[in-house]
Image (tube, rainbow, N blue to C red; front, side, top):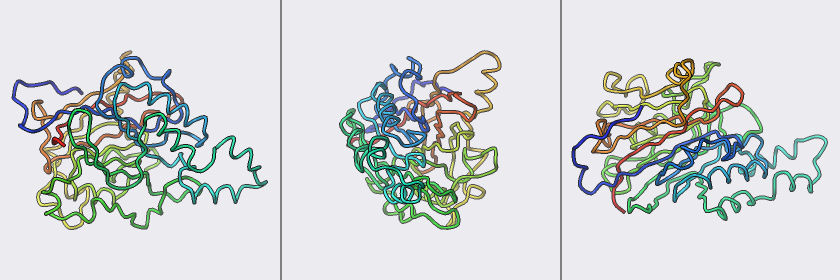
Length: 329
């Protein structure tokens, strides 16, 4: 869905900013992206993790070529569970448990030394975000306050950045927020995680859902956008309207006003179009103050699952271009 532009004037002091959101590219490179995506301008690229399949240096280099080909001055990236060499303790344990033991020279050739991957991204002008809050001044003069986290709940061993589903992962940026913080200049504009919150664009074929603790954190922060991937079948976008006030233990069952929320796209619309021979290269949605669907900060949040690689072979799912208003730096 592409929200049309209305004739109303933009809110004073707000800067309309375009984001290109994608996730789960799994070592695809720029040759597998359509030219319409490569050439379309965005102020910021947000890659929500799973840059690779097996976390090899060769796969990271492929991902770097993809990101470099995108037409944007700022590219922000987080890791995903497939990018396990970036999770030092997990990778060390994985190597220690491998039998027969791998030769150190072979490990270095395939995976590189610790720190090599982040150095490659830095040299390419791509910003790798560790977990936590980040404040960035954009080229257009806007200020971006973003919280990033690569962590997902899982019981599978050997993958990176995971925690047991029965234990709370501390999403510190949001769970500790107060009403005073919400009214401050440091409020969070975007939450960028690898996995989804529970109940929103998180359904899988196997029935596994997203993280309830992440949903609670997002509901308390109420950012402009929460973007993620990981659940490939959950691709899509949804504009959520929050109940006021948010309850002390937020849930997707109690804290969303469903009648005032809008499913913008999910895989069903893409599949229907493909059955008719239509193949969209990207999807757009625009929620600045000058659009027909303006987003009200604190009252609404746009959720985007941008899993790029589909579950069936090499099927590609469209990346997202999203327009939002940000405050001046």
